[in-house]
Image (cartoon, rainbow, N blue to C red; front, side, top):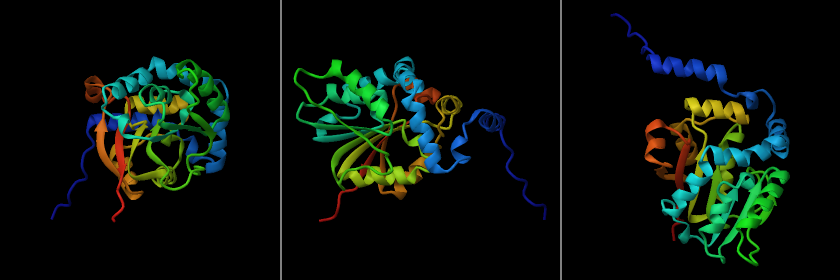
Length: 251
């Protein structure tokens, strides 16, 4: 009996693999986790952090997230307490202030103290008169300084890719979410543009199916996929954008 031949790699897949080997950032695989995280913090404490705010505007991520929230594709009106993880670039934080009631609690969290200072300065122009929101806390997303079940909603925009392994971060996001709470997660995808972004910003990329499996392992249910626009969906731009949900506890 003639043995089955291995599946032939199609030309697009072969090109993608070659492109990935050429440009994908793999620095997180070459050093211990804590050393890599320290490098990330130093990177964003420096000029790269200042550039990130501009990059979020040039890439249209910041205005497109605002458009999505304005159209209530992800309805913020459901929540009374929101944690924004990786707030430094302000690409989500400013929209949270704009599209929530002043009584809704908002906490901004970032690994880089300097990025938080930049966010605080940026948010001053967006705050209502006398508004004290948000609260700013410097913390690692794998060790969040909050009690279990603290927030109705967590937003996490392009931060998870700075963890060599996503499970510790996802587990923490699950822990601080209240049962029935929602997580708005954006992450860099393993596409051609994703590999280039990973090289530029020193981060990894995620395969959509693998990330979905990792979320399920931590108890985060993949509720629905979101897209910035039809063009983004067709061209696979903008990375992975998804709403996840923490299951309600049984009575």
